[in-house]
Length: 192
Image (spheres, rainbow, N blue to C red):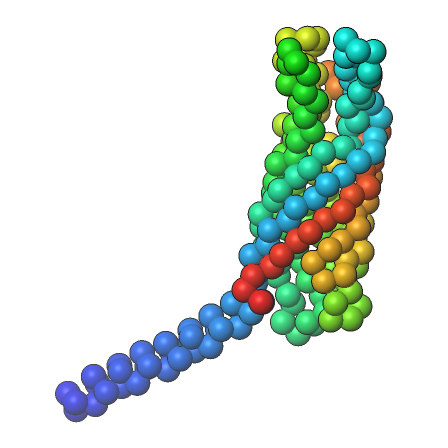
């Protein structure tokens, strides 16, 4: 009787560990890490910079480059359906001899994607941006914008995608700026 109990416990533990290992194998294939690089342009001018040589540069609300990290979840029973989510940092800098101005924000993106083929992906989802700020570096007024949200659409081949974001910024004076952006994204998921 005393020998049966330890054998029973060992048998249960081995079955449980086999089950846990099988579950972790499925999870590792369903969830993968994501790194995203994007360059975008578009939107209304939120500021203009005048140079001493007469040149003028506009700072557009949707323009900038970003890097983000997150994950991709593949629905186990529907391998063509993938959900992606990532958070990043987006910046547009304007440099002058006496100042470095920047429009910065923190994008948070959640998308649902459908694999048309093994290499072509279409996606749509929610794009949010927080901490939206234009820093004039002492040459003018800084501008803080309210958090913004909008829609994102993407068509991608392998790891290169064409992305369009619909968004609007609102500053502290309730003035609105079109922040729509068209961009090129490069995203990698791992492990493969």
